[in-house]
Amino acid sequence: MNIKQLVNKLLKISGDVTSIEKALVYSFADKIAVDTNKSQWLKNYLSDIDYSIVDKVNQITESKLTLNELIAIFEMLVPQSEKKEKGVVYTPEIITKYIVSHTLNCNNIPTVLDPSCGCGAFLVTAAEYIHERYSISYSDIISSYLYGVDIDSNAIDRIKSLLSLIVLMNGEEEKCSFNFICSDTLDKKTYDKLQKMHKNGFDCVVGNPPYVRNKNMSEDTKRHLTNWVSSSIGNVDLYIPFFEIGINLLSDNGRLGYISPNSYLQGVNGRSLRKYFAAEQHQLEIIDFRDSQVFENVTSYTCITLIDKSVKTDAIKYFRLNESNTLEKHTFSEYHFTDFPDGKPWRMRESSIDEVIHKLESSGTPLSNWKIRNGLATLKNDIYFFAPIKEDNTYYYREYDGKTYKIEKKLCIKVAKPNIIKNEAELEKKMEIAIFPYTHTDNAYQLIDEELFKSSFPEAYNFLTEYKSILLNRDKGHGNYPAWYAYGRTQGMNNFGKKLLIPYISGSPVAVMSLDPDVLFYCGYALLSEDIEELKILKVFLESEAFWYYIFHTSKPYSKGYMAFAKNYIVNFTIPELSEEEKTYLLESHTSEELNEFVWGKYHCKQMIV
Image (cartoon, rainbow, N blue to C red; front, side, top):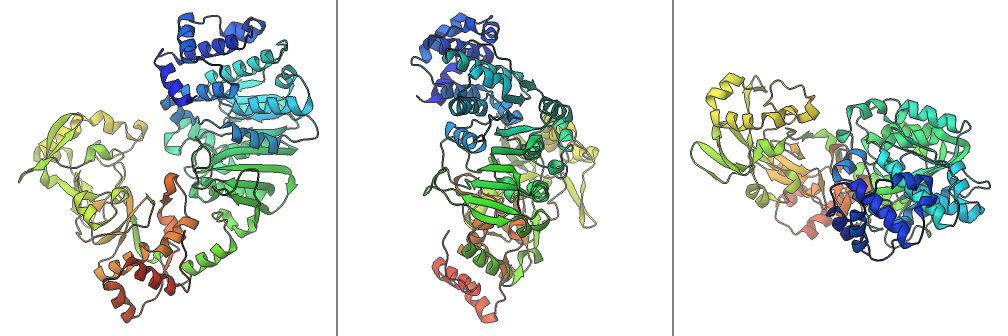
């Protein structure tokens, strides 16, 4: 059964997701001949059920669903806006089973906490595992051993429904009480409540912490981040402090198992967490999916982290999973916290790779010696930047929101978007225009006075005025701009000059020559130099196999084989010293094979392929 197609059909039944969920629970119970009236929870939950929706659900779900299919449907029914805000991501059964089996294998019946339980995939798997291993009733497991927290009351209702169904499916009388808290796990008050539930700590903490970028968090959530050592500095993502919270809530002999983004391994915003792990010295086992799409529906930049609080060690056990091995059949490599002092990125690789990386970082002048700059940041690019549909001597013409507008040319500059440009031909073809309400004064850019803007550039002013409310809502309405029409940030305004354009992320090495000094850029970086020959030589190195090898093994992976080219990932790559004869050679026309052979030779490495 295609769950995604089924969910799309279900969403057409009603705009009320809760009514659909109740109908699904009723239909599920009916098809397996379970009487929901025998569960006080289900009886109350389904008291206002809409039977017309039940009939439609029955038509769509003709065959019986499994419990895990029901969990998957619940997760997918969560509205997209809510998923983004709360970081809801479905965890496949193969992942929950692996984490549960490697975390709950205790001598005694373990108490289990999921601090972001969502629809309950981990707690359902934990209940099944405990029931099978320790032969106790589901009612007792739910009442005495399972605990969960979620900020969404609907999520709590879903997990209570699922656990109640398990009890009835196994012929038990429902005499269980639930141990769930509807609250923000980051809030210290929630933490205090959980500590009181188990003063000696929980035996196991499992889960899939919420995947929310810092820029998408509410102000309340950001304030709660400061409660925790691992998230008190920088713009950390929401999942980061859940490691610290989970470890703190464990008993002295407890174990933690999460699936989470792997960005904490090397990312700047994971530095405080890495320092926290190093200070705590608990045993870590990491299975990194890196950029491999190993499991269906699992995003490609995740990892499994298993922590044993009872083992004090400097060792980090690490394994990178790919298509040639499996979760159950792998061998860990061992690294040490002392290998990465002061929260430095955890670059865990084979020794043969480390040798090559060392040569690439120590064979000349690091890129940090050149000017590498970030691009423009308006915080509303689609309003300021555009591709003209036509132009005349005075105006550019653009389409926006189904309307056509004209914009004064004298207010505009050319801008490039490195993220979508692969070569110099594409640079010209994909060049855009920017509304640029600034003047150059004393080597700096100053915002045009509003009255002058209005009188000198009325068309552009009227266009921006039409979308003033949108511009005022940048930074969630809390932006402190010199005027409502100003760019969201001042970065990137002085990046005029000759340059190499470098994307934020790419699936191959790209460095595009931009020799028009009046062109600025956004969504990318630029290496600036007024020496055209220097730029041409740098381009050879930055588009080489050697540079891609370096990026692939040191940078942050994204889906579909893309890698981050952020400044902090490239500045340690070195450019070897070149003789005049070698410079002349690189400035001549050669095949990519010849250039790659030359570049690898300058690092005293044989040619390596990613």
